[in-house]
Structures are given as C-alpha cells and as structure tokens.
Image (cartoon, rainbow, N blue to C red; front, side, top):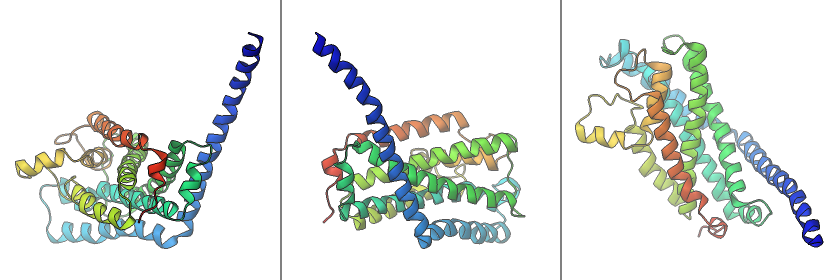
Length: 284
C-alpha cells in the first residue's frame, strides 16, 4: 500500500512534463513549417498573386464586359472576393501537403513520429502552420477587397462585427480545407498522385461552390451537386458576411457553420485513426 502511494504521485507529476513536451513539439513543428514557407518566396507569392490576379482581371472583365444582371448592382468583382479567399486557402493547404510529402520522403516525418510526441501532435502542428499562412493570405485578399476603389463590400452585419465574423470564418475555412488536404495526403502515397487528385477533385468543387457564379439559376441537378459540395458553405458564409446586403437566397450563417463543423469532423475522424506507421511510409 505504501508503495502504491509513492508511485501514484510520481505518475501524476509526470503528466505536466508530458504535456509540456507535447506542446513544445507542437510549437517546434509549427515554427519549422512557417519558416520553410516564409523562405520559399515563390510559393508564398504565387499562392497569393493568382487569386488577386483573378479578382482584378476576371472581376473587371465580367463586370465591365458582360454586366451581370443576377448580381447586386452588377458588381461581379465584389462577388468574387469570397471565392478568392477560399482559393487562397486551397493553395495554402496544397503547399502544406507538399511539405508533408517532402518530410515523409526525406525521413524527417519518421523521426517526428518516433519521438515522444503523438502522431496527432505532428499532424496538428502541420495543420496549424498551414492555417496560419492561409488565414494571413486570405485576410490580405479581404483587405485588398476592402480598400480598392470599385470593390464595394456590403458588410450587412456592420463593419466591426463583419470583420470579426470574417476572421473567424476564414480561420474555420482554412481548417476545413487543410483537413481535406491532409486526409488526401495520408491516403495517397506519392506527391504526383496527390496533385492529380487535387486537380481532379478540388477545382470542380471550387467551380460548383458558388465562387464564380450564383447558384440560384443553375439547373436542378447542378444545384443538388452544389449543395452536396462542402466548399459551398464556406463561400456562402463569406458572401453573407462581406458581399450581400441581405440574407435572401443564402443558406444562413448558423446552418453554414454547423455544416462546416460536421464536414470538418467527418474529414478529421479518419485522419485521427491513421496509424503512425502508415503516415511514415515513404512514397515509391
């Protein structure tokens, strides 16, 4: 009995050390991936410049050349802002998955997984780094949309509340797309296969999400596909926050948030069940 009384306090004393070790490993992985992205300026700039170029060229061309009547005041450039924010998040998550493959191929991921830190800490650190980069890029696009003349954001909930909602929505969106990207990366062994699947899956999802055109006038079969698309709801949320002056024709903030959280749980569940030995497999 005396022996048990001596052992139990020791075990309890070890718990803070273990948690501190996991937190230290988590922050080290986040810092390492952030430094890697910041050093790769071509990766950083390209993932930010493409959405901005589409916003400027496509938005101006359609607004001035076609004068879309289905949009509020025919302002297609403002309509594009939420879609470009989600596109920036997609690019950021793609680059984060490329880092996952690089670490796996050079053996760094295996070393991380055999460390005392659990595999969820390793994956969580990589997701957090991608979420930080993607959120900063998305906020940059939102800032550009807010200050550039000719882009008229509605902020139907008010500017202050809208900014808070937009920041929260952007972070949630980045977590969602990073979870989707990470799920694919843990199931596909080669980087080439991953990029092929990303192109085949994510770009159709983006086009069917309401990022480039309203969903109201689509044929029924396309509208059904659009509402089965997990990317539809983040874009619907951002349209409600920064673009639309009313809620007619949109799903709604609370339903959007609930559906995003359900999709996030569905994506993260299989990732959390993935064995560390499978994560460390080197792609052939």
